[in-house]
Length: 257
Image 1: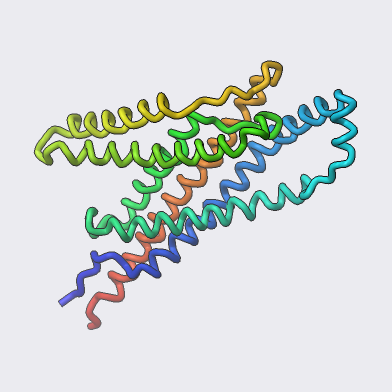
Image 2: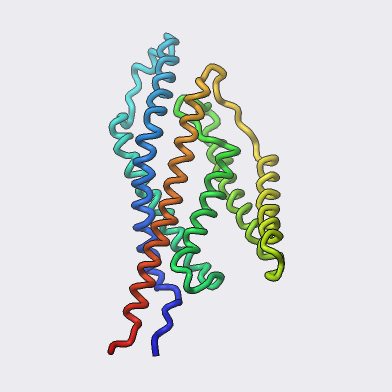
C-alpha cells in the first residue's frame, strides 16, 4: 500500500529550501538594484555633494569627513546585503508555510508558498511604499531618521494586518457564496485597514523643491522593483523546490517491485 505523500515535509527540509530560494532571489534582486538603482544613487550623491560644496562652511566640514565605506565597497556590499536579507525572508516564508500547513491543501506542491510571497509583497512592501516611498541619499532630514524608521516599520506591520484582514474577509463569507462576493469581502477588509492606516500615520514632506522629479521617481521605482524581484523570486523558487521535494518523496514512497 503506498504511503501518504501529501503531508508537509519535515520543517528542516522546508526551511533549507526557503533559505536557498531566498538567497538566490536576493542575489537576483541585488543584480537588479545594481543595474536599475545604482545610476540613480550616483546621481543623487552628485547632487548632494554639489550642494554641500556650494556652501563654504559645509564644504569645510565635508572635507574633513572620511566615508566609513567607499562607494566601491557599498556596491559590493549590495549583493551581500540583498543575499542575506533574501535568505532571512525565505526562512520566514518557509516557517509560515509550515505553520499554516493545516489551512491548505496537502498536495499544493508549494503553491501556497507563492501565495504567501505575494501576500508579503503586498503587505510589507507595496502598502508601506504607497505611504512612504523610498528616497535617494540626498533626500531626507537626518534629524527625523529615527522617527521615519519607526513609522515605516509600523506601516509594514499595518500592511500585514491589512492582508490578514483581507484573508478574514474572504473566509467570513460562506464557502457556498459566489467567488466574486468572497473576493469583494477580501478587498473590502484589506482596503479598510489600509485606508485607516494611511489616515492615522503621519506624513513626511522632506523632498527639496529643486530636487529633480524624474530622478526621484526613477530611484523610487527602482527600489520598488528590487523588492518585486526579490519576493517574486522567493515565491517562484520556493514553489519549484517544494514541488521537486514532493515529487522526490512520492518517488521514494512507491513500493518496490
